[in-house]
Image (cartoon, rainbow, N blue to C red; front, side, top):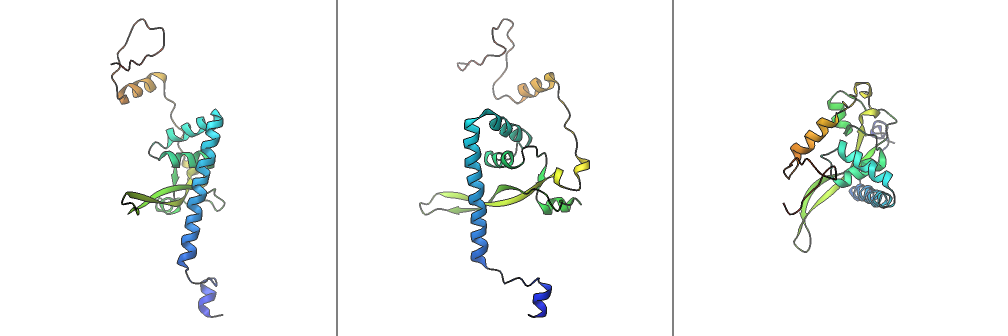
Length: 175
């Protein structure tokens, strides 16, 4: 054993093929979790509601990543990788639960000439699993008036108040 082995922990040299196989296995595991969670959502409303709650909190996440988060930690509120937490002087707990999401990587051209994007499995951690858990802000409850106002402002179709309507709301596809 050389002195280098003592300081490097006796690790062996980097094997690119082994690393690629590990990354492929992580991606495959993530896609299998997405498929299993989608089957669960189709079978019961609770898991679908859980997914919708996650998608509402992480509105910039893709559908696949919201499904992954809802399957692994549905109560998550703020996710970052270790480097991002560390850059904010926040440290991930030693026994923290890793949440795997799929991060877009390079664009490539398939054999048939079409363009595609590859994805890498990425480990992120919720704020509740960090030294900042005490700094977590409780979400401010919104009144029904604020929620309806936000819905009207963000609507792609115009709203028109109607006095006598049998239903609470009505959408006319003709208009």
